[in-house]
Length: 147
Image (cartoon, rainbow, N blue to C red; front, top):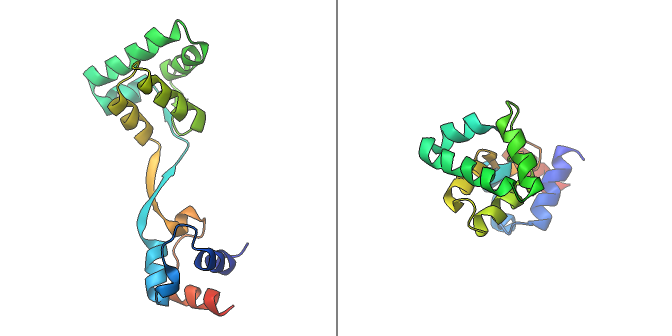
């Protein structure tokens, strides 16, 4: 789908309820370009990354919690094996993120530490970037509305 078609679809369906219909072309373009969306990206974290990001105390507690859970949970065992390697584990993967949340809910990991580790894979983007069309100009909004 070409860029104008993507813009047209976004403007007409307004899936996020932004209110494009009441905006000028410039206002709609500005709304599409505002960096206010969070996108989860493939991001690998290993023990070094976790310790550096959380600090030695919280990072050690996080890794120790995984170590304790690994003895009775094979999925955690394998995740921990990847974290111990240089390559790390993809903290942007939906299943990994859900498993970390479950470990926090179960009291195995500190919820704040889980949130911080998951944040490694989060980036702030615009709606245009989220849609894969990049920067949107008022003239493109006008063309999308005309067509």
